[in-house]
Structures are given as C-alpha cells and as structure tokens.
Amino acid sequence: MKRIFVLMLALVLAGGFVFANGGQEGDSDKVVIGALIRNTDEQFVADYAANLKLLAENAGVTLKLQDSRGDMAMQLDQMNTLLSQGVKYFVIVSNTTEATADMAKAINAKGGGAAFSNIQPSVDALKVGPNFYLASSPESVAGQIQAKILVDYFKAHPEKMKNGDPDAIDAICIYGQLGHPAQVYRTNAVLGGIKDAGYKLNIVAEDTANWKPDEAQQKMDTWLSAYSGQFDVVIANNDGMALGAVESLLTHKYTDDPNDPTVDLDGDGIVLSVPVVGVDATQVAVTSMAEKKLYATVLQDAKGQSQTAFDLAYMMATEGSATGKPAGGITPLTSPIAESPADDPAVIGQCYLVPFKAVTMDNYKDFLE
Image (cartoon, rainbow, N blue to C red; front, side, top):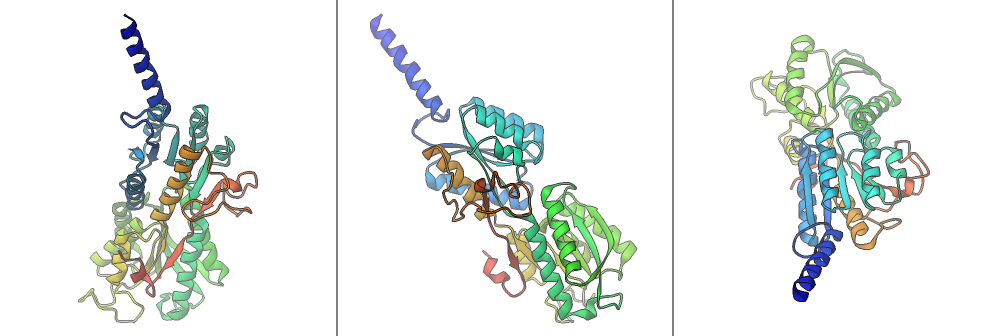
C-alpha cells in the first residue's frame, strides 16, 4: 500500500510539473509558445507562419500554431484552448485590433504575455501589462514609400499622364479590408504623399478587395470596361491585390504592345500601359517585377516581424520578461510616432518596429530568393 501511495504521489507531482512548463507531453524543460495566426491563405501571413515554424525548430521550441482562417471567434477559442493546456506565452497575428485587449487580459490572468505582430494591438492591450508587446511595421511608412516611388515615376515619365496635365495623376485604388489598420494607414499615407509632392490626385475608381487577388482581378475587370484609357496608375494596399490587378490588365491586353505582352516599348521598365504598385514584397510579387509586370512594391518583412515576435515570446518564456531587450535586432522605441499604439508615450517601450523597404526596378534582384 505504501509503495502504491508513493507511486501515485510521484505521478501527480510529475504531471503538475509538466503542466507548469507549458502543458506539453515529454520533455518538461522544453519551451512552449502558442502562435495565433489570422489566415495563412494570405501569402504574407503564410510566409510569416513558415518562418515562425523554422525559428521554433531551430531553437528547440514546441510551437503550437493555430490558423483561425480569418475568423475572430475561432481565434479566441483557439487561444482559450491553449491557455487551458498551460500555454502562457504567445505570438499573435490577430484578426482584429479591437479584440487584442480582451486577448491580453485573458493571457495576463494566466500569468503570461504576448507579442502582437503584423496587426497592431490597441493601446489598451499593451497597457494590460509589461509583458505585452508590438512587433510590427509602421503601416503609414509603407504608404509613404509607395508615394515616393510613384512621384519619382511620374517625374521621369510625365507623358504617362493620360489626361495631358503634368500636375494631375488619375488613380485606381484597391483597398484591403476597410477599417483595417493597414488599409487606413497605408491608404492615407500614399494618397497624402502624392498630394504633398504637389500633384492633384483624381480617384477614378476605388473599392475594397479584402486583400484577395481574385477579388481585385474581378474589380479590375469591371473598371477596365468602364474606364479604359482614363487612369494612370493602380495603387493596391498589398501585393495579392496588386497581382490580381496585373492579371486583369494582362488579360485585357492593357500593355505597351497588345500583340506582344513581353515588350516594354516606352522604356518605363514594365510591359503594362500603367504602373501597378503593392506592399509586402512576397516572392510572387518580386518575380512579377522580374517579368516586367508589377512595377514596384514595399517590403513588409515577414521574416523580420516573425523573428522579432518570436524572440520576444522566447525571452518571456525563458527569462520572465523581454522589457528593454533587443529582439530580432530591433530595439524598443524611445519616442512616440504618429501611429497607434506607438503614439502613446506610456507604451512606446513595448513597441518594436521592423522597417519597411522600397523594392523597385533598381533593386528587386536583391529580394529574390
């Protein structure tokens, strides 16, 4: 009887020890990190998740990655399940900013923390506690870079303005999910940047394509029927939608030479009649640039963002906190910027900003893998 009691006690203690270290089976010393990912159907998010898996494998970390397929309710259920399993530290690419405060409160109640990445958390989410971080890129900068690329283009090619006015640009705009932080900040920055450069900006057509290439292609098909010859540029909030627009333009032979869609007759670097710009610099997009189809994009660094978020979660899991420490080669902000949540002085030390980079015809080869 005594031997049975001792054995049962040992099993209970062992089980409690495993649970306390993340709820995993096997090696109780192995770090466990939860990853709540919004939708790997989007190429950038898929690249982000793939690098997260590689980082975890190289670090000997058990990564419990959940894809919510764009469903916020599902993502909350996935979070609660991982919390119930003893997982305390997370990388989160949330479906919405609005849900991040509640997510932070639930994780904090279990004594854990999270690095919110790609989709900005709310200020309230970061104020839940010092172990909640932003590991993302300032979306307005992406729009500013798009604006500079287009201003430089039209300065070099004023003849491409179809209305004959060298001071006016006629644009078609394809937006991501309306109200999404990236959609708002990128759009305001690119349109504002073009205007700040002294151009009049006429929006010929605009609509959301919800980040999706097929929706963007369908929108572009409709607009080409209505506005052919009446626009100078297509501006998209991400590469997926930009490539959807490119496909539509190619299908409708909206090219320098309708009989040979591989020829750049006017020397602007692309075979299309108008430049199309996106954001993300996915490999599919950079390959399109190599084929002289997509004109330009802006690198949103999936590897840089995922590395930074992973480092923050790993430091929390192994050291208890990441406060003040570099992550992914990035140091926390020391002064506010004009974009939430990093505009609040109370949380700037929890904000790690991965820079955007222009990808143009001059340097796209540097981004090909």
